[in-house]
Length: 293
Image (cartoon, rainbow, N blue to C red; front, top):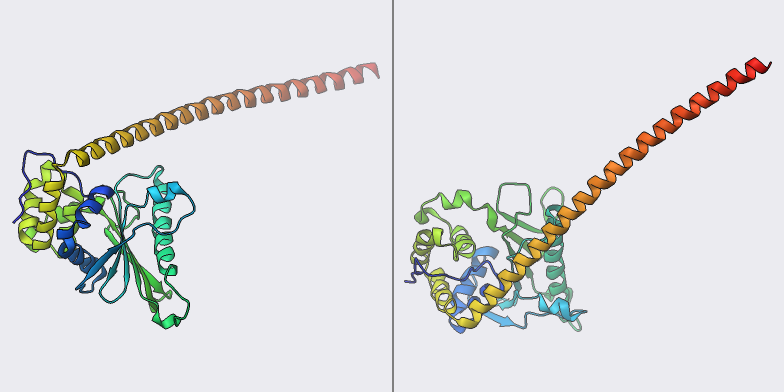
């Protein structure tokens, strides 16, 4: 049974590089199989982790691909992604994350070798995206999509998209761990593993579900690695600086818009005064013309 120390810092599984470090560990295979089984609703008996970076146009694009690209026992492809940072701009961030997940899903599916293969021999592709940022307006924290008609009839089972919003787990945390589903236990672990205030709940989850307990043991070990802690500190600093800069520029932009609005109001007032002056001048000219006649 894995127990996370109550008073020690544990790296958060909600960071993409931590998730990858834990679940690509040679001893983590049962945990990875269980996580995939849980979220694709299909028993996985084997999994192979392959190169997680698909062909891309730029080096920068490769650098941000820290998700897990896997093949399971029936040949299906599964991509597991953790979006641990908040995307700038609420509405824009939502659209960006969804569009990115759809892009990864379709890119992975179309990367299959098609030469000499019948289309009905293509394997299924699953995209599982965890996000700490809320994406949709509805209360449910799991959104699943596939190719369906308007009335819900499935057109094809070839591609599946699952988005798990880890910021919507308040109701789950109020449940006794004994009553949690595997999806709820995995989601709780992924979101709150690094949160000391939730350590008691996390330890109960680790005790209740062995595969998550295995991941917890590896996480506790990795969290003591100096290199991993340095990476975590560096990324936190980068994120803090990024957020600070974004807030600064947003504040400056708001100030500039307010100043521009004030200038526009002054110009509108001047235009109104000028219009009144023109009207008055026109009236005086009219009266002068009448006197001259």
